[in-house]
Image (tube, rainbow over all chains, first blue to last red; front, side):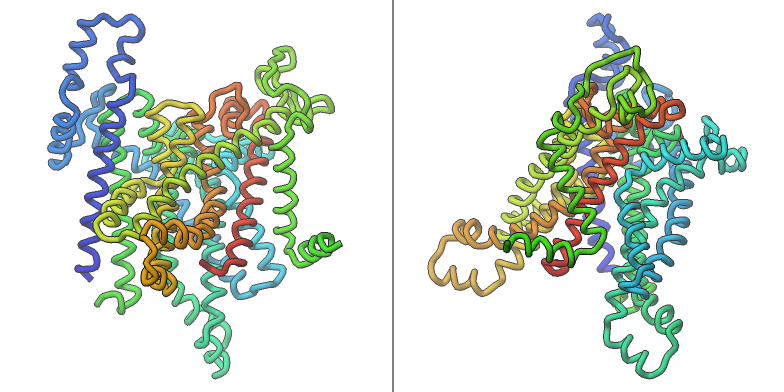
Length: 313
Length: 277
C-alpha cells in the first residue's frame, strides 16, 4: 500500500508548494497593499517607505517567499499584520468553528442522503424514486446561501426566532452554540444530502443490475440480506471516496455560509485577510486549506485498503 | 407535420422533470433574448419614494432599498448572470480543452508538465479558488469571468486529455499515420472532432456548478458591481434587509434554482443519451 500512497503524497506536496507560490506572487503583483490601506489617501513617501520596509515588502518577491517558506517548514506561519496574533493560533481558532459546522453537516447529510439514495435505488422507477430524485435535483440546484436566507426568514416568520449574532463555542455556551450553528448546518446539509442521495442511488441501481444479485435472489436469500449485506457493502468504497469529496466541498462551501451567519470560521478569515491585504493570514489559511484537502484525500486512499483488502497489494 | 410528430413524441416520452426543464429553458431563452419585452420597466432607475415596497400589482416582485423595480432587475439579470457563466465556461473549455487535447495526444514530458500544473488549481476547493482570484484582483465582471474560467479549466483539461488518449490508441489513427498524414492534421482533423462531444457534455454538466459559484461570489460582493443587475449581487444587496424585505432575496434565488435545475436535467438527459461517458 505504501508504494501506492507515497507518490500521491509527494505530488500533493509539490502542488501545495506551487499553489502557495502562485498565491504569494499574485497578491504582491496587484496594486494596493497593507501600507496603502494603513496610510489611506494622505500618504507621504517617507512613511510609505518605512512601513514597506517594516513589513518586508521592499525586498525581492522571491526572497520574501523563501523567508516565509523557511518559517513554514519550522511550523511558524508568521503573525497577522493587523492583529499581531500568530497566524497558527488564528487559523486553529477559525478551523474549530468550520470543523464543527463541517462535521455536523457531514453527519446530517449522511443520515438523510444515504437512506434516501438506498430506498430510491431499490425502488427504481417507482413514484417514491421520482419524488426522491426531484428532491435531489432541487437540493443540488438551490444556492446554499439562499437556502440560509430563506431559513432565516422562515424561522423568524413561523416561530418568531432568529439566531444570536455573536459566536459562542460549544465549550462556552452549548445552547447558544446550537442556536447559532443550526441554520448554517441545515442549509449546507440540504445540498450535501441531495448530492449523497443522488450518488448512492446511482451506485445502488448499478449494483442491483449485476449478476451476483440475481444469483442471490435465485438461491432464495431474503431482500434485506441482499440489499444491505451484499449491495450496500459493495458500494462502500465509492461511498467513502464520495464522503471525502463532500467533506472538502463542505469546507469550501462554508465560506459563503460563514459570511451570511457571521461565523468566525476559516472562510471568513481568508475573505477578511484578502480584503485587508493581510498577506500572512491569507497565505497561512490557504496553506492550511490545501493541507486539509491533502489529509482528507490521503485518509480516503488509506481507507480503501481497510475496506477492500485487494487494494493493499 | 413531421416536426409536430417529433415534438409530440418528445413530450410523451419525457419524464416530468425533463418537461419542466425544457419549458424553463425556453422561458430563459426568451428572457435572455428580449428582457425589455417581458419587463419594460428600467432595471436601474432609482425612486427613493418607493423603497422597500412588498410585491404588488404595480411592482410584481416588490422594490429594493433604493426603490428599483425588482421584477425588471431579476428579469434583466438573466442575460447578465447566465451570459457571464456561459462566457467563462466557454473560455475555460477553449483553453482547457485545447491544452488537454495537446497533452493527451503528445504524451511524454509535455503531458507530465501540463497535468501537474493543472493539478495545482485543483488543490483548492472551487469556491476558495474563486474567492482568492476575485478577492485579490478586485470585483468586476471581467475578473469574475477570469476566476470562473480558471477554476473550471482543470476539469475541461482532464476530459479532453483522456479523450485524446483514448482516440489516439484507436485503429483509425494508426491507419492515418500509415497513410502518411501529419501529426497536426491527425490532432486537428480527426481527434478533435471525436473529443468535442465529451467537452460539450462537460460544459453542460459544469454549468449549474459554475452558476452556483458565480452567485456565491456575487453574494460575497466579489462579483458584478451594482447597479448592473445580477442575481448574486441582488442577493448580496438583499442580505442586509432580509428581516424587513424578504422579497429582495426570494426572487433571484428562485431564478438561480430554476436555471440550475433546467441545465442540470438537460445535462443528465444528454449523459444518458450518450451513454455513461
